[in-house]
Length: 119
Image (tube, rainbow, N blue to C red):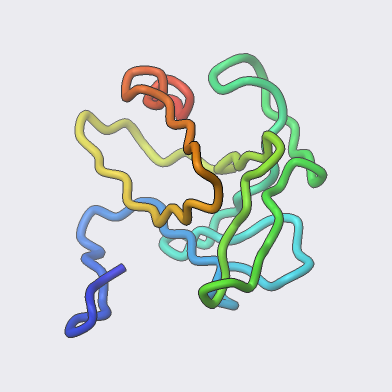
């Protein structure tokens, strides 16, 4: 998001912005959230990335936790699917906050992570 002296984000070229702490994006108890750039829907994921047709699954939407003003908790294989075409891009960046609550944090190596998110 920004840093202490500048809390705005760069929006030029931004195609997806999710903020569980912002009620325009998500409210506790919902089973989907809203892309704050386009207004498109983001739902619980089912199946494997890039493998067939997506069917929204509310049971797979990440849990909400109010810690740090609001976070999505992906524990237990939860996931999200963007229900809109974000276009084709040759360059991109991903920003996310990760809260480490256990001694071991499993992360996918970059090529596997890129495949998992559909790039």
